[in-house]
Length: 306
Ligand code: G1P
Image (cartoon, rainbow, N blue to C red; front, side, top):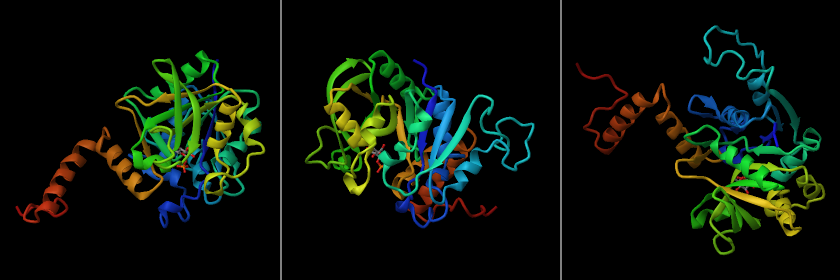
């Protein structure tokens, strides 16, 4: 099975990042030298997507401008300098639709029903990237398991701390189907430590068959009074459909820009490991930390005496 469609939800208001996101999308915040959602698009394209639907909303125009093939920047002869088109638009096509109001992730995915048609598709949340030593390796594993076991949904999961279970969809794992994937017996949105069935948290990447829309169509609001994708998946499992969990491996990370704490860590990490800027920045950071610990050490932002 070849999966070529991807939905990137980017409609959320980003209120946890105010005032930064009052008029600009959180998905446009940089991780390293590119906007977060560009990294997400590169990930799904690497995994085989050629048709990408971005679910936008209020104050999200910048996302569309960013992916425009001719967005006013003069095309340069230097490849990959970020001035020209970001993708080969003869291969990769972007589509946009607006979520009328931020009614939750399930509602956002619902907006993609016509785009998806009868095809299986990827969902990649637009506010976080998954880093891995091999580009898009987690998505490749999900797609392989999804096809091999004829799943209706395959979901990336990561171990989260006990206290953090209230910030994730949490999965109840069933038996392993192979070394990369297990069958899920339940899933619950943001349950908190007492009710959490495990520490496997849903990690921003999904592969679905169009059956998910049968469960999204009439879904009532759930956690936080929002239409929750997790609730649709839960109902699908309860009806006996096969849903797989695919865990992140060592060396793979989810970096998200959802709040200032996670965003600042994600930005530091991507800059400090950047091929071009990382080395100098690591030296600068070491000097800055030495100065902050003991102000008699030189301040790296001031010129040296000599
Ligand atoms: C969403 C999902 C949640 C998932 C999380 C991270 O929550 O509803 O199940 O664990 O993304 O992928 P959000 O962070 O958008 O509130």
